[in-house]
Image (cartoon, rainbow, N blue to C red; front, side):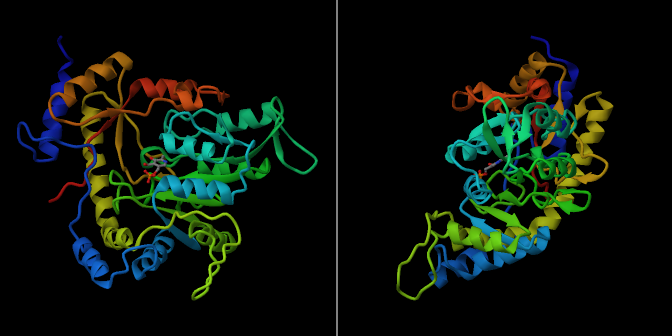
Length: 388
Ligand SMILES: Cc1ncc(COP(=O)(O)O)c(C=O)c1O
Protein backbone atom coordinates (compact mmCIF):
# COMPACT_ATOMS: atom_id res chain seq x y z
CA UNK A 1 0.00 0.00 0.00
CA UNK A 2 1.44 3.39 -0.94
CA UNK A 3 0.13 6.19 1.16
CA UNK A 4 -0.03 9.84 0.12
CA UNK A 5 3.14 11.77 0.98
CA UNK A 6 1.33 14.03 3.43
CA UNK A 7 0.63 11.10 5.83
CA UNK A 8 4.34 10.81 6.59
CA UNK A 9 4.68 14.59 6.80
CA UNK A 10 1.75 14.71 9.22
CA UNK A 11 3.42 12.18 11.52
CA UNK A 12 6.74 14.06 11.37
CA UNK A 13 5.04 17.38 12.07
CA UNK A 14 3.14 15.94 15.06
CA UNK A 15 6.37 14.57 16.54
CA UNK A 16 8.00 17.98 16.08
CA UNK A 17 5.00 19.80 17.59
CA UNK A 18 4.99 17.61 20.70
CA UNK A 19 8.77 17.24 20.84
CA UNK A 20 8.26 13.48 20.83
CA UNK A 21 10.91 10.95 19.77
CA UNK A 22 10.52 8.15 17.22
CA UNK A 23 8.33 5.63 19.07
CA UNK A 24 6.79 7.80 21.76
CA UNK A 25 2.99 7.57 21.79
CA UNK A 26 1.25 10.91 21.15
CA UNK A 27 -2.31 10.95 22.57
CA UNK A 28 -5.24 12.92 21.23
CA UNK A 29 -5.75 14.85 24.44
CA UNK A 30 -3.91 14.21 27.69
CA UNK A 31 -4.76 15.91 30.99
CA UNK A 32 -2.16 18.17 32.61
CA UNK A 33 -1.87 18.58 36.39
CA UNK A 34 0.77 21.25 36.76
CA UNK A 35 -0.84 23.58 39.29
CA UNK A 36 -2.41 23.19 42.73
CA UNK A 37 -4.15 19.86 42.05
CA UNK A 38 -2.18 17.76 44.56
CA UNK A 39 -2.31 20.50 47.21
CA UNK A 40 -6.10 20.92 47.02
CA UNK A 41 -6.83 17.17 46.85
CA UNK A 42 -4.57 16.63 49.82
CA UNK A 43 -6.34 19.42 51.76
CA UNK A 44 -9.65 17.74 50.98
CA UNK A 45 -8.46 14.38 52.30
CA UNK A 46 -7.13 16.04 55.45
CA UNK A 47 -10.47 17.79 55.98
CA UNK A 48 -12.33 14.41 55.63
CA UNK A 49 -14.95 16.25 53.55
CA UNK A 50 -14.38 14.12 50.46
CA UNK A 51 -18.00 13.58 49.49
CA UNK A 52 -20.84 15.77 48.23
CA UNK A 53 -20.55 18.51 50.87
CA UNK A 54 -17.46 20.67 51.05
CA UNK A 55 -15.86 24.03 50.44
CA UNK A 56 -14.36 23.11 47.07
CA UNK A 57 -17.76 22.24 45.58
CA UNK A 58 -19.06 25.70 46.48
CA UNK A 59 -15.86 27.35 45.26
CA UNK A 60 -15.96 25.44 41.94
CA UNK A 61 -19.57 26.52 41.43
CA UNK A 62 -18.82 30.16 42.22
CA UNK A 63 -15.83 30.18 39.90
CA UNK A 64 -17.66 28.45 37.05
CA UNK A 65 -20.46 31.01 37.31
CA UNK A 66 -17.95 33.85 37.31
CA UNK A 67 -15.96 32.41 34.41
CA UNK A 68 -18.95 31.73 32.15
CA UNK A 69 -20.87 34.81 33.28
CA UNK A 70 -23.88 32.65 34.23
CA UNK A 71 -25.98 33.56 37.26
CA UNK A 72 -25.64 30.01 38.64
CA UNK A 73 -23.46 26.95 38.16
CA UNK A 74 -24.35 23.61 39.72
CA UNK A 75 -21.59 20.99 39.87
CA UNK A 76 -22.52 17.39 39.01
CA UNK A 77 -20.84 13.99 38.92
CA UNK A 78 -20.34 14.18 35.16
CA UNK A 79 -21.65 15.89 32.03
CA UNK A 80 -24.16 13.15 31.21
CA UNK A 81 -25.82 13.58 34.62
CA UNK A 82 -25.86 17.36 34.07
CA UNK A 83 -27.58 16.82 30.73
CA UNK A 84 -30.19 14.46 32.19
CA UNK A 85 -30.95 16.84 35.06
CA UNK A 86 -31.10 19.80 32.63
CA UNK A 87 -33.69 18.02 30.49
CA UNK A 88 -35.76 17.19 33.58
CA UNK A 89 -35.54 20.87 34.58
CA UNK A 90 -36.53 21.89 31.04
CA UNK A 91 -39.78 19.98 31.64
CA UNK A 92 -39.15 17.07 29.26
CA UNK A 93 -41.83 14.45 29.94
CA UNK A 94 -42.12 10.82 28.85
CA UNK A 95 -43.49 10.79 25.30
CA UNK A 96 -42.19 14.28 24.38
CA UNK A 97 -39.82 14.83 21.49
CA UNK A 98 -36.41 16.49 21.81
CA UNK A 99 -34.36 17.86 18.89
CA UNK A 100 -30.67 17.09 18.53
CA UNK A 101 -28.00 16.55 15.87
CA UNK A 102 -26.98 13.12 14.50
CA UNK A 103 -23.27 13.94 14.87
CA UNK A 104 -22.66 14.05 18.61
CA UNK A 105 -21.36 11.96 21.48
CA UNK A 106 -23.87 9.31 22.57
CA UNK A 107 -24.54 11.10 25.89
CA UNK A 108 -26.68 13.74 24.14
CA UNK A 109 -29.04 11.05 22.87
CA UNK A 110 -28.88 8.92 26.01
CA UNK A 111 -29.97 11.81 28.24
CA UNK A 112 -33.11 12.18 26.09
CA UNK A 113 -33.82 8.46 26.43
CA UNK A 114 -33.37 8.64 30.23
CA UNK A 115 -36.41 10.98 30.17
CA UNK A 116 -38.37 8.42 28.08
CA UNK A 117 -38.57 11.06 25.38
CA UNK A 118 -38.07 10.62 21.62
CA UNK A 119 -35.00 12.05 19.87
CA UNK A 120 -35.64 13.86 16.55
CA UNK A 121 -32.57 14.56 14.43
CA UNK A 122 -31.92 17.72 12.42
CA UNK A 123 -28.76 18.23 10.38
CA UNK A 124 -25.48 19.97 11.21
CA UNK A 125 -23.59 22.71 9.37
CA UNK A 126 -20.51 21.61 7.45
CA UNK A 127 -18.39 24.48 8.77
CA UNK A 128 -19.11 24.10 12.50
CA UNK A 129 -20.16 20.41 12.69
CA UNK A 130 -22.79 21.72 15.12
CA UNK A 131 -26.59 21.93 14.76
CA UNK A 132 -27.69 23.74 11.62
CA UNK A 133 -30.08 26.65 12.24
CA UNK A 134 -31.18 26.26 8.62
CA UNK A 135 -32.13 22.58 9.02
CA UNK A 136 -33.86 23.34 12.32
CA UNK A 137 -35.89 26.12 10.71
CA UNK A 138 -36.88 23.91 7.81
CA UNK A 139 -38.06 21.21 10.20
CA UNK A 140 -39.99 23.64 12.40
CA UNK A 141 -41.71 25.41 9.50
CA UNK A 142 -42.63 22.30 7.49
CA UNK A 143 -43.27 19.65 10.17
CA UNK A 144 -44.68 21.38 13.26
CA UNK A 145 -47.52 23.58 14.45
CA UNK A 146 -48.42 25.33 17.71
CA UNK A 147 -51.35 23.77 19.62
CA UNK A 148 -53.95 25.69 21.66
CA UNK A 149 -51.69 25.62 24.73
CA UNK A 150 -48.90 27.22 22.73
CA UNK A 151 -46.82 24.03 22.61
CA UNK A 152 -44.88 23.11 19.49
CA UNK A 153 -46.30 19.85 18.11
CA UNK A 154 -44.66 17.52 15.59
CA UNK A 155 -47.61 17.31 13.20
CA UNK A 156 -47.04 13.74 11.96
CA UNK A 157 -46.59 12.17 15.43
CA UNK A 158 -48.79 14.51 17.46
CA UNK A 159 -46.07 14.71 20.12
CA UNK A 160 -44.93 17.89 21.85
CA UNK A 161 -41.41 19.04 20.94
CA UNK A 162 -40.30 20.14 24.36
CA UNK A 163 -36.62 20.88 24.01
CA UNK A 164 -33.78 21.35 21.57
CA UNK A 165 -30.20 20.29 22.43
CA UNK A 166 -27.60 21.69 20.03
CA UNK A 167 -23.99 20.68 20.67
CA UNK A 168 -20.83 22.77 20.15
CA UNK A 169 -18.74 20.14 18.40
CA UNK A 170 -15.07 19.89 19.44
CA UNK A 171 -15.46 23.33 21.08
CA UNK A 172 -16.49 25.14 17.87
CA UNK A 173 -19.55 27.28 18.61
CA UNK A 174 -22.51 26.46 16.35
CA UNK A 175 -24.94 29.18 15.11
CA UNK A 176 -26.46 29.33 18.56
CA UNK A 177 -28.00 32.84 18.40
CA UNK A 178 -30.10 31.81 15.38
CA UNK A 179 -31.04 28.53 17.04
CA UNK A 180 -32.05 30.38 20.22
CA UNK A 181 -34.31 32.72 18.21
CA UNK A 182 -35.99 29.76 16.48
CA UNK A 183 -36.55 27.98 19.79
CA UNK A 184 -38.08 31.09 21.27
CA UNK A 185 -40.39 31.58 18.28
CA UNK A 186 -41.61 27.96 18.46
CA UNK A 187 -41.81 27.77 22.26
CA UNK A 188 -39.13 25.10 22.61
CA UNK A 189 -36.77 25.05 25.60
CA UNK A 190 -33.15 25.43 24.53
CA UNK A 191 -30.66 23.26 26.43
CA UNK A 192 -27.08 23.61 25.18
CA UNK A 193 -24.78 20.64 25.25
CA UNK A 194 -21.62 22.65 25.80
CA UNK A 195 -19.80 19.64 27.29
CA UNK A 196 -16.87 20.27 24.94
CA UNK A 197 -16.84 24.04 24.88
CA UNK A 198 -15.68 25.60 28.14
CA UNK A 199 -13.85 28.76 27.06
CA UNK A 200 -15.74 29.01 23.73
CA UNK A 201 -17.83 32.05 22.91
CA UNK A 202 -20.44 33.02 20.32
CA UNK A 203 -20.71 36.80 19.82
CA UNK A 204 -18.83 37.30 23.07
CA UNK A 205 -21.24 35.19 25.14
CA UNK A 206 -19.97 31.95 26.68
CA UNK A 207 -21.45 28.83 25.10
CA UNK A 208 -24.13 27.30 27.29
CA UNK A 209 -25.59 30.71 28.12
CA UNK A 210 -27.90 31.10 25.13
CA UNK A 211 -30.00 28.25 26.44
CA UNK A 212 -32.33 28.27 29.44
CA UNK A 213 -29.79 25.73 30.65
CA UNK A 214 -26.35 24.68 29.45
CA UNK A 215 -24.08 21.88 30.55
CA UNK A 216 -20.31 21.35 30.81
CA UNK A 217 -18.15 18.24 31.15
CA UNK A 218 -14.88 17.79 32.99
CA UNK A 219 -14.17 14.26 31.83
CA UNK A 220 -10.51 13.21 31.60
CA UNK A 221 -10.35 14.00 27.88
CA UNK A 222 -11.70 17.57 28.14
CA UNK A 223 -9.92 20.96 28.18
CA UNK A 224 -9.96 20.86 31.99
CA UNK A 225 -10.74 17.76 34.01
CA UNK A 226 -11.48 16.66 37.55
CA UNK A 227 -11.48 12.95 36.75
CA UNK A 228 -15.22 12.87 36.27
CA UNK A 229 -17.36 15.95 36.61
CA UNK A 230 -19.87 18.22 35.00
CA UNK A 231 -21.96 21.31 35.61
CA UNK A 232 -25.27 22.88 34.76
CA UNK A 233 -25.19 26.61 34.07
CA UNK A 234 -28.21 28.91 33.93
CA UNK A 235 -29.08 32.59 34.17
CA UNK A 236 -32.42 31.75 35.81
CA UNK A 237 -31.80 31.85 39.57
CA UNK A 238 -35.00 30.02 40.46
CA UNK A 239 -34.11 27.24 38.05
CA UNK A 240 -30.54 27.24 39.40
CA UNK A 241 -31.84 26.69 42.96
CA UNK A 242 -34.10 23.93 41.70
CA UNK A 243 -31.17 22.37 39.81
CA UNK A 244 -29.13 22.24 43.01
CA UNK A 245 -32.12 20.81 44.90
CA UNK A 246 -32.92 17.94 42.52
CA UNK A 247 -29.26 17.03 41.98
CA UNK A 248 -28.85 16.67 45.76
CA UNK A 249 -31.71 14.14 46.21
CA UNK A 250 -34.30 16.92 46.68
CA UNK A 251 -33.66 16.94 50.44
CA UNK A 252 -35.06 19.86 52.42
CA UNK A 253 -32.23 21.34 54.52
CA UNK A 254 -32.59 20.27 58.17
CA UNK A 255 -29.96 19.33 60.80
CA UNK A 256 -31.35 15.79 61.28
CA UNK A 257 -34.73 15.29 59.61
CA UNK A 258 -34.99 13.50 56.25
CA UNK A 259 -37.56 15.12 54.01
CA UNK A 260 -37.42 14.83 50.22
CA UNK A 261 -40.15 16.85 48.54
CA UNK A 262 -39.87 15.40 45.01
CA UNK A 263 -38.00 12.69 43.15
CA UNK A 264 -34.38 13.76 43.36
CA UNK A 265 -31.09 12.55 41.94
CA UNK A 266 -27.78 11.84 43.61
CA UNK A 267 -25.92 13.75 40.89
CA UNK A 268 -23.72 16.04 43.00
CA UNK A 269 -19.99 16.40 42.33
CA UNK A 270 -17.89 15.06 45.24
CA UNK A 271 -15.64 17.55 47.03
CA UNK A 272 -12.60 15.46 46.08
CA UNK A 273 -13.28 16.05 42.39
CA UNK A 274 -14.17 19.69 43.02
CA UNK A 275 -10.73 20.22 44.58
CA UNK A 276 -9.18 19.08 41.29
CA UNK A 277 -11.59 21.25 39.34
CA UNK A 278 -10.71 24.42 41.29
CA UNK A 279 -7.02 23.81 40.54
CA UNK A 280 -7.76 23.17 36.86
CA UNK A 281 -9.87 26.32 36.60
CA UNK A 282 -6.80 28.27 37.76
CA UNK A 283 -4.95 26.80 34.75
CA UNK A 284 -7.72 27.35 32.21
CA UNK A 285 -6.56 30.69 30.69
CA UNK A 286 -3.07 29.26 30.15
CA UNK A 287 -4.49 26.04 28.65
CA UNK A 288 -6.68 28.02 26.25
CA UNK A 289 -3.81 30.23 25.10
CA UNK A 290 -1.60 27.20 24.55
CA UNK A 291 -4.33 25.29 22.67
CA UNK A 292 -4.95 28.25 20.36
CA UNK A 293 -1.24 28.30 19.52
CA UNK A 294 -1.44 24.57 18.73
CA UNK A 295 -4.49 25.15 16.54
CA UNK A 296 -2.61 27.89 14.68
CA UNK A 297 0.31 25.51 14.12
CA UNK A 298 -2.13 22.94 12.68
CA UNK A 299 -3.75 25.55 10.42
CA UNK A 300 -0.31 26.41 9.03
CA UNK A 301 0.49 22.75 8.37
CA UNK A 302 -2.91 22.06 6.80
CA UNK A 303 -2.80 25.13 4.59
CA UNK A 304 0.62 24.22 3.21
CA UNK A 305 -0.57 20.64 2.50
CA UNK A 306 -3.99 21.49 1.04
CA UNK A 307 -5.87 19.81 3.92
CA UNK A 308 -9.25 21.23 4.96
CA UNK A 309 -9.66 21.97 8.65
CA UNK A 310 -12.52 23.02 10.93
CA UNK A 311 -12.06 26.61 12.16
CA UNK A 312 -14.10 28.95 14.33
CA UNK A 313 -16.66 31.20 12.62
CA UNK A 314 -15.78 34.91 12.35
CA UNK A 315 -18.10 35.93 15.19
CA UNK A 316 -17.17 33.00 17.42
CA UNK A 317 -14.21 31.98 19.54
CA UNK A 318 -13.40 28.31 19.89
CA UNK A 319 -11.48 26.73 22.76
CA UNK A 320 -9.99 24.40 20.10
CA UNK A 321 -10.50 21.47 22.43
CA UNK A 322 -9.95 18.96 19.62
CA UNK A 323 -8.63 20.00 16.24
CA UNK A 324 -10.32 18.34 13.29
CA UNK A 325 -9.20 17.89 9.70
CA UNK A 326 -11.43 16.91 6.78
CA UNK A 327 -10.04 14.29 4.42
CA UNK A 328 -11.16 13.59 0.84
CA UNK A 329 -13.50 10.69 1.55
CA UNK A 330 -14.06 7.75 3.92
CA UNK A 331 -11.45 5.61 2.18
CA UNK A 332 -8.72 8.22 2.64
CA UNK A 333 -9.92 8.81 6.19
CA UNK A 334 -9.56 5.11 7.03
CA UNK A 335 -6.11 4.86 5.46
CA UNK A 336 -5.02 7.94 7.40
CA UNK A 337 -6.34 6.47 10.68
CA UNK A 338 -4.53 3.21 9.99
CA UNK A 339 -1.26 4.93 9.07
CA UNK A 340 -1.11 7.37 11.98
CA UNK A 341 -2.33 5.05 14.76
CA UNK A 342 0.11 2.32 13.71
CA UNK A 343 2.89 4.91 14.07
CA UNK A 344 1.94 5.85 17.65
CA UNK A 345 0.20 9.10 16.67
CA UNK A 346 -3.34 8.93 17.97
CA UNK A 347 -6.05 10.11 15.62
CA UNK A 348 -9.70 9.12 15.52
CA UNK A 349 -12.81 9.54 13.41
CA UNK A 350 -15.88 11.48 14.50
CA UNK A 351 -18.55 9.54 16.39
CA UNK A 352 -20.71 7.12 14.42
CA UNK A 353 -23.92 9.02 13.68
CA UNK A 354 -26.41 8.27 16.46
CA UNK A 355 -29.30 7.08 14.22
CA UNK A 356 -27.05 4.32 12.81
CA UNK A 357 -26.74 2.69 16.24
CA UNK A 358 -29.29 0.36 17.90
CA UNK A 359 -30.58 2.67 20.68
CA UNK A 360 -31.54 5.34 18.12
CA UNK A 361 -32.21 3.37 14.94
CA UNK A 362 -35.99 3.80 15.18
CA UNK A 363 -35.91 7.52 15.90
CA UNK A 364 -36.98 10.17 13.41
CA UNK A 365 -34.26 11.68 11.21
CA UNK A 366 -35.41 14.88 9.50
CA UNK A 367 -32.06 15.58 7.81
CA UNK A 368 -28.52 14.19 8.03
CA UNK A 369 -26.82 14.94 4.70
CA UNK A 370 -24.11 17.18 6.11
CA UNK A 371 -23.67 14.94 9.14
CA UNK A 372 -23.00 11.97 6.84
CA UNK A 373 -20.60 14.04 4.73
CA UNK A 374 -18.66 15.05 7.85
CA UNK A 375 -18.73 11.55 9.36
CA UNK A 376 -16.92 10.27 6.24
CA UNK A 377 -14.21 12.91 6.43
CA UNK A 378 -13.50 14.14 9.99
CA UNK A 379 -10.34 13.07 11.73
CA UNK A 380 -9.43 14.47 15.15
CA UNK A 381 -5.73 15.09 15.56
CA UNK A 382 -3.50 15.53 18.63
CA UNK A 383 -4.55 18.65 20.53
CA UNK A 384 -3.10 18.33 24.04
CA UNK A 385 -1.51 21.16 25.98
CA UNK A 386 2.13 21.56 24.94
CA UNK A 387 4.51 22.44 27.77
CA UNK A 388 7.17 25.03 26.89
C1 LIG B 1 -21.04 16.32 23.47
C2 LIG B 1 -20.93 15.66 24.79
N1 LIG B 1 -22.03 15.59 25.56
C3 LIG B 1 -21.98 15.03 26.77
C4 LIG B 1 -20.82 14.49 27.27
C5 LIG B 1 -20.88 13.80 28.56
O1 LIG B 1 -19.97 14.20 29.50
P1 LIG B 1 -19.37 13.17 30.57
O2 LIG B 1 -18.40 12.30 29.89
O3 LIG B 1 -18.75 14.08 31.57
O4 LIG B 1 -20.52 12.41 31.13
C6 LIG B 1 -19.64 14.56 26.51
C7 LIG B 1 -18.33 14.10 26.94
O5 LIG B 1 -17.90 13.17 27.37
C8 LIG B 1 -19.71 15.14 25.22
O6 LIG B 1 -18.62 15.21 24.44
